[in-house]
Image (cartoon, rainbow, N blue to C red; front, top):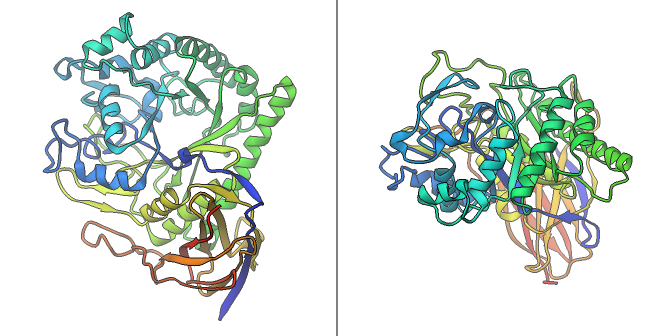
Length: 503
């Protein structure tokens, strides 16, 4: 049996150009993300600064345009001064967010060096847990001011004559969470964030700032937190953050694959709150969103390392399945659907910690199932998102009703004449016939149809079997006078790339 769906795609029905930062990521001083992940001096591929070249190559392939650093919960207890200057003089300290020992071998300057190697910008976070506006303004001066002041000259003395010019800065992290070092009420945080934002922008008016939204939509303070924080910070900030994670710990795949509908509603709700504050303040500024933590996280809520004060113990090293990759694909499509409002997003995290890339310290590297939809979206999802008219059969699950079996979006690169359809067939048993009406495009031809599929929803990639679940280019797509017929295998991620007449 084959189920049938359709999409009408018109180049004139646009949602928004894609901000490349939609394909951002996140590296925190947590587990083996830094030590043993990007930084592994004992590895055969390590360069003179200790950075793994095999990891750099895997990350470069993703074309990640921005990476959030250094946290995360870590940043709320972090003194940035401990991570600069001669390594021999840096302190080993108890790190209270994750109960480990922080060696401070990697800090602001090292991460800036590494970011250049992978071709990405840095989204820097400041500590609004144990610290505040003074440390934040000094960090901006250290990183971005050319010279002639104490902090900029200190950077120069550390070997960095040119400023880093970090543009995007997060005003703390998840400050509503009781787990957070220095957690605050909405009023406490909003006042501090506003005053910190002022002095940071006085140091460097070119920077853009992200205020903390709720840690998740499940927080009891959700919505009230956003409204209060924005009421206090609206004129100073440029983005509001969202964080959300999903899992299939109940082993209900149909419900799990529908959770992108929850992300969709979460984004709509936060955008509505932003617009409420805009109206209340009679402001002309439309606040944009930064979904700077999102992913599948099956081990969320588990305890920290069994033994306290280890150095970079393995933590949250989820092994991702084929169904996890399908969920990530659905989340990426949701982000593209909201490209008019979500301008930055960070899959959390990038390496070893709930990550698409895994390494063995001093050893091998392999790519998880979730690597591939992110790779495809980042590489091929550049251009303008189009508002398609979609018809699809639907199903009900435990938590959702009217879930379309087809989850899809179209991105159009007018300059190159490229049309890319990202599509997930949520049906677990049947293939889908997808009929695409591209009546507004001329000279349509197929470049390729990439498919990620597996007979086993629980199939994984591991060190011993790293290519168990990988995409292939054998998808079935046919073109006839502007009409495209594609067949999407059951439970599959699909990328249909079409060439059309340019302009």
